[in-house]
Image 1 (cartoon, helix red, strand yellow):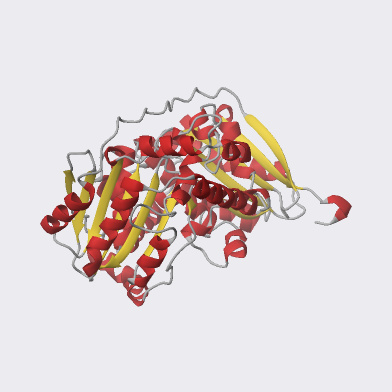
Image 2 (cartoon, rainbow, N blue to C red):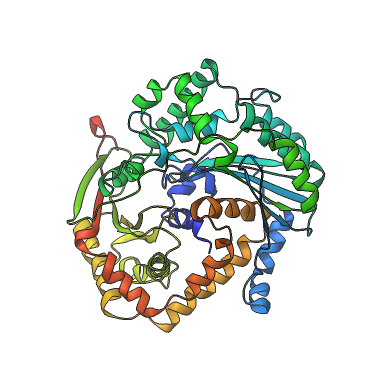
Length: 490
């Protein structure tokens, strides 16, 4: 399993909430429950016959090859600072392009939250040569798909198109990087859209305030403490000048990575990239946000009354190191052992044996700065949340005091191998991951090394990480409690 999906994995297997909200288990549809990413509405999300056929071959591929082949790529840079990563794949006449900007909600300042996500919407409002809303139409009319998403650590836009439309994808991305239309009408329109999204996905959604409360309570540093979608007050206070300055600062060529994977020739594509992007001016490098987080010295607790929730939910978070570090990989494997599948420890103890929760999950985000390891427990009707919490801590203590088993390690390793084969099949995943790894770690080759690092995690590393980070003084507990609405309705 590639680690950018961990937050989504938590939600995908958490209760039937995600399905009841969206009718499907799509990455971009899970924002209300696990709001690390904010995306525009999904376009052309229908699964292709090729994808279905590839999924059927996964078991065979694992059995014959062991692990997926590494992703081969080349790196380049234009004079204006635009970083380029190209990976040829001639297995199908398509390609994917991803533009990742080094701009997320962590770059926002107090009083102006929500700008990174607001800009994700603004980027579809037209540019010098593309009319308002035409980006979607042009891509669809040429047989492609597209989307964008925002997280605390980056903002990304992508298209997948037929191989004979390489110029189209490059032109569209370059035109809005160079000449996005920023005016009062577009700002007002998209501000209202984002505010409605906040009402729909947070303010009027069961558990919609849980993660924002968790982040606000667990973190001391403003960078991760505030929500990616921002506050109504800050969105209302945004001016055209604020937005224009944000665009100039963060949407510069030298603050972006363009990654492409698919059916093209590198030398030909490089010439086209120079043609479309070469004359976009660079800007002074934006200030790097302060990501330091003071050591937590005592447990933090908060209870939320939620009139839309039907069950009590416990969110138990521990501060851990940033992603792509040795202890982070050890905690990833620990999370898999705790909660993935019906043979996992939390399922066996809390769901099957004690029957005190309907479902339980554990895992971390993939963050550039201080991360969180989170346990999410949906308490069964009539059961005591305090007892559920006690049983969860007993499983944590067991990890500290007893080595995990060989069978548990083998299970996680097989899941990692399977996930790698499955995910690397698509050009879009590879393109977005190469760009993300370049922005997060200054190393796009993490796409090839992350699974190796996870596969190499030992029992001793897991036990040491549990003892170091999963402590009472280092945890934050948020309890979301159903609250009857006025008049007694639930």
